[in-house]
Length: 230
Image (cartoon, rainbow, N blue to C red; front, side, top):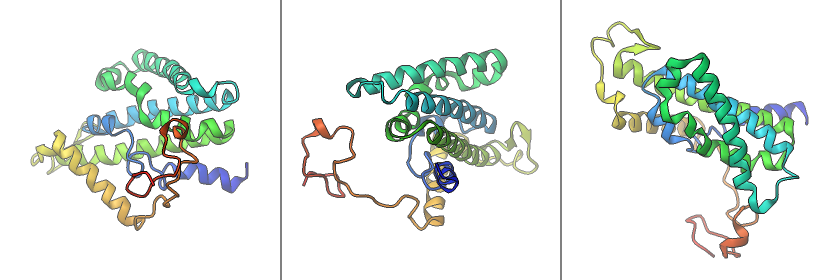
């Protein structure tokens, strides 16, 4: 793999194909855990480790795993890595383990992890898959940190638990609540869309050739931009 290609794979997950702000994946932990920056960092690191390990494992086994049972196989591999990460966090960062709660084991069904397994790791080599996992993990972590920073500073008047002058005396409490989470999330998506002029991801053909469900879908003619059969 060429150096420029490797760099592109790594950077795509951070900006061009950011899983949270561009692909709009992983919204459940993003909205739930971004009330504190420490939780965002913890979840981001955990998800990055799982992404890296699962991408490499699935890439290494992509020619061995039967196509008709690939999704269950991916989930079993991902679940194994999530269990290891969960045990490590519980052993060495118990306060973080308690803060993340159910969202830590739910990394197993995080659509970012499974999505990269299906769309990238199963089609590329181990090196490229590792870079994709790292890039997507960094993009996920940075997006969560940006969102958590806004919500914690303005909503609670702290950052990583440290009081911020003025803000700690004048918190906008709604930003620490679910409606505030949706507002900040939408704001960040709008900023990214504006910064990239709406071209973070180039529009592709809506045909069925690359769809993993094409064989069972029945829409052999493809779909139009509204998703209807043509």
